[in-house]
Image 1 (cartoon, rainbow, N blue to C red):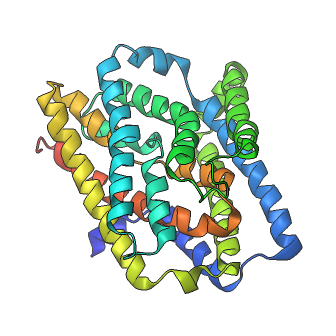
Image 2 (cartoon, helix red, strand yellow):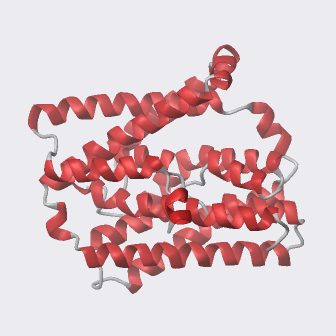
Length: 323
């Protein structure tokens, strides 16, 4: 139990505390409008900093590993969506539709960046390739995730045809434009960004916490907890665990069959099996109506914590030479 508690991310505990706070003290009325404006500004700042952090040198350094990157992308944007659709179809009528939709959204997200690289380094994997693969996944995710949401989640966005033109414009203004501007500003801001990583990390996390609180506030006002039971939450956690184990097993087995080196298999394992909370929460806020945001991001919050715990254990085993 002590080891488990040590692996719990304090950020997730704060996030769960905000969910509890939103459940008893949701922001309403004029305060909700102000909070939404602040949250939108925080999301734009978040993606500006993501763009500024992305090093072109890191991308160029890993471009030679095309087959590895394609394998990671196939898992992230191919295998995961298929699994998400299967879970949604198989459990339809047995679990809250909102949570199942949230799980599908989780499956459409890009990989993490920081933790994928950190676990790859801990496990003695190919760090340069991990930097490139995780960064490429996040960059493509700005385009691919909204596209997949439009194709596979018709109705939840509030438009029968998927993602509306208004949502596309919002994505361009809130996510893509700040990201591009941030990356273009890297020659001037790169040094500051690289020497103030702790401060940048706090800005990232604060932005996500703002989105979580406002999202759950809106969902609570719309009756979230009358629609989602504790049994649903327990079932969702079990599903996340099974899917994470399945994807990790498949990525390790397939990468071995494809003849990748051990160092590259580690990259595929950690970059292919993870989903980004930092990208997912802001994207959800942009793509979905406020009333459904709570259940949409809840599966992602659970999966995020679970992947951190499991990957930390696996990275330690791989570091010591065990597979």
